[in-house]
Length: 130
Ligand SMILES: [Zn+2]
Ligand SMILES: [Zn+2]
Image 1 (tube, rainbow, N blue to C red):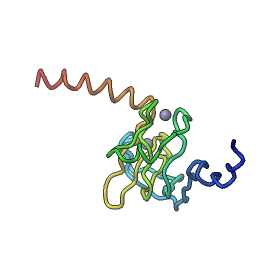
Image 2: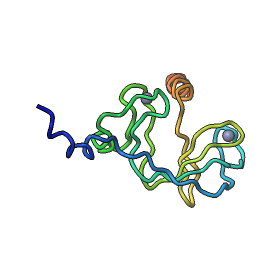
Image 3: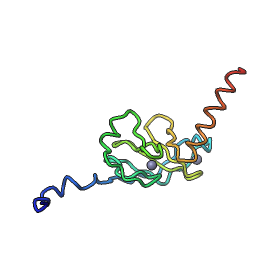
């Protein structure tokens, strides 16, 4: 029944996780509110195959990546986009997307996403009292 499976091997393999390390540089961390050293920097070359947060194997990354902001279907972790640079702040360990010429954009981890959602709610209360 499955003796012809050998030629399918290449299709069934999950996409390769490929990242290239980059030279450490300084960038503005919006969590530390300061210029910080980013020692761990990398450029993502391919789609993510496994969620870095909950370790779920992403079954169909191509489908997830069709969305404007690809996120893990289980935990909402924003997925790294191929061709973009990412780094970890040495000060607080937060993950950022680094785009040349702009301030790094925070990639919130699980705790930061909870925090953000909480703040999102309290902020709307603040807006009401203006
Ligand atoms: Zn996840
Ligand atoms: Zn920081």
